[in-house]
Amino acid sequence: MNKHFDTPTVVVIVVTFVLFVVALFVKGLTHDILLEAGVFLVSVKLILMSYKSSVGNARVLEELEEIKKRLNN
Image 1 (cartoon, rainbow, N blue to C red):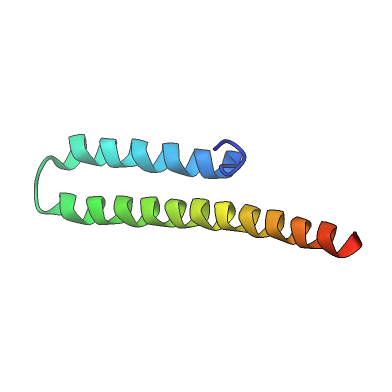
Image 2: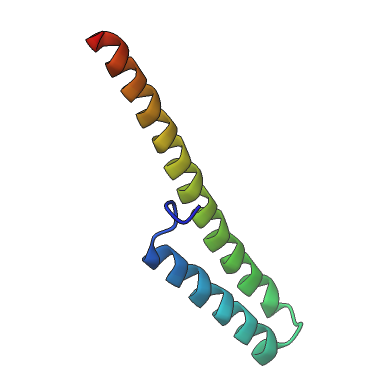
């Protein structure tokens, strides 16, 4: 899994989580927390989409390598 998450992605995950936790303590459990939760969930969704794309790209590359090997034989 480490090969799919580069350093900037990990930094974004950590910063987003830290800011979300800080917002929880600063704003409390008011209606503004829904906005903070929405921003957090959008960030998580983007990170998950990036991960899924990375895994899919790796699978396609493996299949292309196999096709290349079969064509060379």
